[in-house]
Amino acid sequence: MSDTVQQPKRSQTVPGQRGAAPLRGLLPLVAGLILWQLLASREVPYFPPPLDWIKSLDALRLNGRLWPALETTLISFFSALIISVVIGSVLGILLGRSALLDRLLGPALEFGRTMPAGALVPVAVLIMGYTDTMTLFVVTLTSFWPILLNVRSAARQISQDRLDTARVLRLSWWDTQRKILLPSVLPAIQLGTQIAAPVVLIIVLLVEILTQISGIGREIALAQSTFRTSTVFGLVALTGLLGLGVNWMISWSARLIRNYEPAGSGGSLS
Amino acid sequence: MDAASKSGRITTQSGPGALARFNWPGLATIVALIALWELYSRTLGARFGTIASVADIASAFNKLLFEGPLLEQLIHTLTVSIIGWIIASVIGLAMGAAIGLWRPVWAYTMASIDVLRSIPSISLVSIALMVFGFSSKMEMVIVVYVSQWPVLLATAGGIRAVPGSYLETARTVRLSNAAMTFKILLPGALPSILVGLRLSLTLAIALAVVAEMVGNPAGLGFGLVFSQQAIQPAQAFAYLVTIGIVGWGLNAAFVLIAGRLFRAYGPAL
Image 1 (cartoon, each protein chain N blue to C red):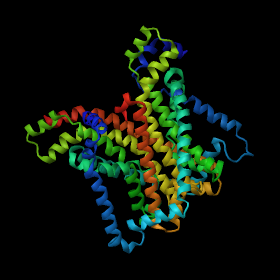
Image 2 (image 1 turned 180 degrees about the horizontal axis):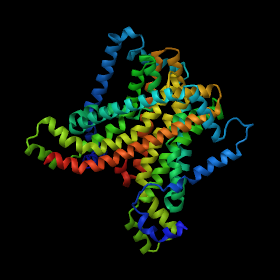
Image 3 (image 1 turned 30 degrees about the vertical axis):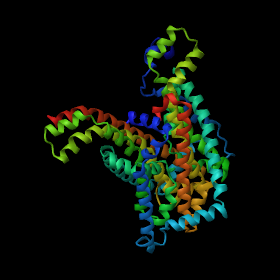
Image 4 (image 1 turned 60 degrees about the vertical axis):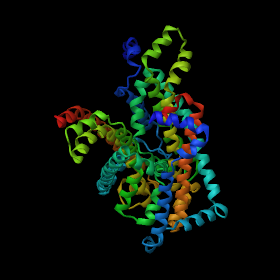
């Protein structure tokens, strides 16, 4: 029925519009999970039914291993994300505002940017050992690129009017950065973070899987090597929920920034 | 910036300008960074025992290439990444086109796709490992599954973002549905699709390497982890540099080829 209602609107709504996907799009996933639950056979251990996933997660929780692992992973994730945002934004502004620096560092950064994510992990382990610093270092080094690139191109395109305004108002160097540059590149920082955040989560998990020290990644690797399939599926579903949470958090921050930008830049100028 | 790159393209063809326009300062920075690394590895870094000097890395690379398994591993990783990327692109294009062209398909699948693709790819490697074992099949499945999403999203999004005025023009000249798809919608979505293809190529290499590191005992990723576990820093760095060059090279090759094939859409890349 809803389709027939939408038919006449189609020509107006389809082109150029990218609204959020409607929730009824979850139907195939839900139907798939229900079918899985009903059809999964106990003899084939590879694909345990979804309710078993929850049971094994609960068992892990009762063992007292779920929450500490989740905590470690989340702490690594947020610390690395914050460091990435800071480094990416600062470097992006520097490179975007200085043609000389951009030319000097451009090729080196081009190489670093295309380095396949994850390849740095074994080398970092070799040099720095199994430490928290290593995790932060390797995760940041792999994931700040999208922020850097977005901020760099936004910083290049800051309108001359805004910079002239700063000059006319005789803002100090610091105030120019804070009140003119930063608000101008804020949407780019947000966009870059949106691309970087899933990479941060992936590399944190990869480090945990490879080093097997702590975190959700370690639990996944342990469960996989001892062939506890339903635990693995449960933990993977949990990381999926983490990924969804991350996406949701980032789109929420986008709304916050959209609200802030016009009012904020106007306010600081007046 | 756009004007600069356009004028750059013209001077490239005229020849002598290219030499002057080449980013020598950028190259100098890379050389300086390598020299700094060499200095560090021979002085302060030497006491760690894990900082390999450039000369050591180069000789490890030579040894791996001519006496060791490097060439074979390189070919393995390249084959899996490229074939996986092609399969993923075909799947992504087909599904993306279906989602972009028919609104009900979009409405009834997109939210599921958003949920599925927010599962971090690395945790799926563990599932693939249990199902397919330590094999190249596992690696291929992971590469295809993960790198289909960017193409799918870019195709669907690109088609849905084709300006309404194009569609109205097409309707005015009474294009058939097929003509509309192949003459308006797909060309209109091409810049977006190219970006998606490039992203998924990057992902394909990254996931091939990761799958080799965690599961499949073959390819550059395996060589890298093996060197790490054997505490062979020079070897590990040689693998890291090789992987970096593969990533950079495939990316550059894609930009070059796509730029040639779709010259009119150049600015999108």
